[in-house]
Image (cartoon, rainbow, N blue to C red; front, top):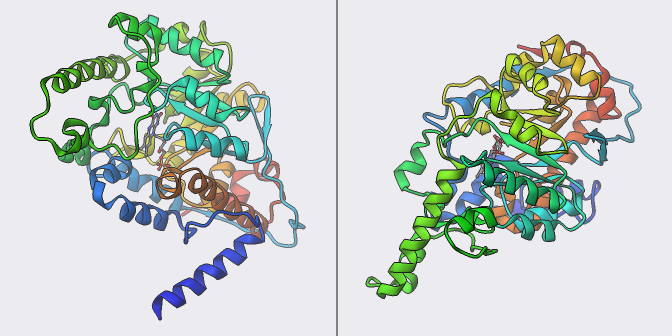
Length: 424
Ligand SMILES: Cc1cc2nc3c(=O)[nH]c(=O)nc-3n(C[C@H](O)[C@H](O)[C@H](O)COP(=O)(O)O)c2cc1C
């Protein structure tokens, strides 16, 4: 009986959603928290893989602060606005997109394909599990950005920038909050570290400068998902691997550790190092991980074109400020507001977004576009799952905008924040 009732409820949901998009993919729930639970159930045999995605730094305080910040802010809806037709179009870095969403640096080729279909910028991570070239092929004419974990060696940094530019990545996102990985108890508990097996190292293994250092040709690998450490150590469950296999495994681990030493080296960069990147990247340069007005102003000073106000979803510093609160602080800076108004400095945002109204609140506080979570959709249903999550967020955003009295995101942007939201 219960399942029939559940099926009816799902059918009702789908009918409602179908009014926005008849081809909307179905994940059996539109709630991002429930999608996370479903992904957890699907990955039950690989619980460590799930916690790798869902885990936070330390006690998870920053993740909680992210959600608490969204709960503190409340929308003040306005009535009798003709918001029958709503426009989510957003122009950033001189390009107009149909929505304000960006797919962040998590994921792989199915994500790139979904992003291309939705005309949403896709960001390939330096820690991606596909090469820069493979993802460019998958994304075809879709908008794509490259995210840099700043390597220790300048020649490798320059090689990555060149490959990204040559392969049509239009913007560069430099992540500043991860000069090394934070204290993540779940990952340490399970020892789930794909990078030690060279999974998430495909950008490195396909880099001519990095591979030449090891006297090796480049490779474009496509490792399977989910990553299964046991299978890599003991294929077919063999307990005694042939010596040649063990030799190859050891050699691979040496290569993998060498890439980790580049990408997550613990070498902290300073503002003085920025010219290396600024002088060698000719498109938009975006700093990800900014959480203070002072750093936002420094980003303007060193010639960045934009920032992502972000705390990496609470995965780096435990007990940090909620990301929406950080956005409020950043936007208190007159210099930042003026730079944004001049069109020369773009404010992006992530961390903690789970609903359409969350997006509305971030836009009301000054964010121009949002990096949204989609990885559980990817785990549930690949490309279609990513598409579903993006469309659910957009449907929810569109409805919430209309019901609050806004016809377009430009209307939201031009309304004084204090007239549309309040902090409790
Ligand atoms: C599994 C996973 C992998 C991530 N990998 C990267 C990455 O390679 N580079 C990066 O800058 N951010 C990375 N992030 C952080 C996201 O880009 C984003 O800042 C964060 O997920 C936002 O918080 P939210 O998950 O609460 O939305 C990753 C996040 C997750 C969950």
